[in-house]
Length: 75
Image 1 (cartoon, rainbow, N blue to C red):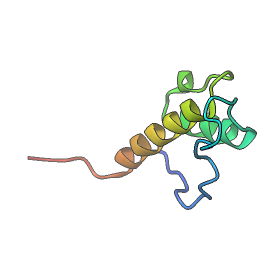
Image 2: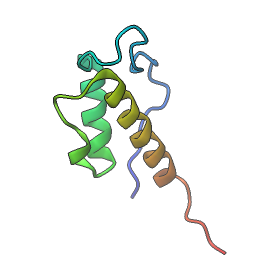
Image 3: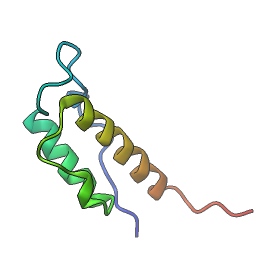
C-alpha cells in the first residue's frame, strides 16, 4: 500500500531567497521528517541541512510519493 501525503500544504517550505545557506526552518524539519518516513527513506532527514538543501529534499520526496500513489505502468 502506497503512502499518501497532503500536497495542499502551504508552500512555506521553500528555500529562503535571501539566505538559502541558513539552517532549515522548524517547518521544513517537520515536513522533511514526515516525508522521509512516508517514502521509506529515513536517511533523507538530517538535522543540519540548509534551507536550500531541505527544500530540494522535500521536493524530491514529494515527487517520489506522488509516483508511489500512481498505478503501476504496464506495457
